[in-house]
Image 1 (cartoon, rainbow, N blue to C red):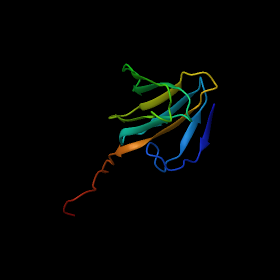
Image 2 (spheres, rainbow, N blue to C red):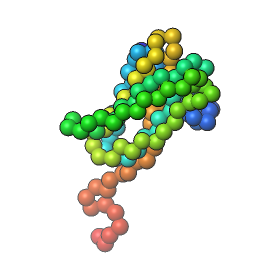
Image 3 (spheres, one colour):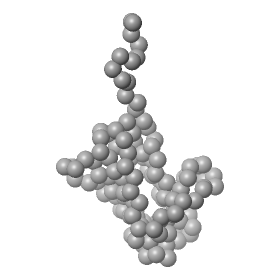
Image 4 (cartoon, rainbow, N blue to C red):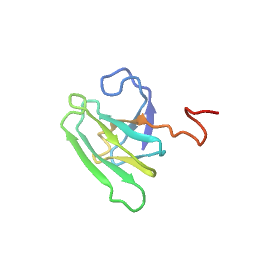
Length: 125
């Protein structure tokens, strides 16, 4: 189960909104083609942090998987920037702990590349 929480300012989340991911739950975020990388932040309120982060890139590619673990997710939160070039990218965060240990999760675009439409840009008209 997932609920939203406005975040207080912290080094890992800044002013971004974070989601509370209960134990055993999965948080899935698709990204459009122009998103070149995403930032992922995971912490807890002093509980153990156990998660799996999966990056799925299109239907025919193997997924990339990261397993994250810490004894105290407040003292040792996880933060990463993950490159997501191309189309069809989906990021999943899975809380592998039991329901007693929720995670605070933030996933959002980090670098976006806006593609120019045909006829736009610097040129003579």
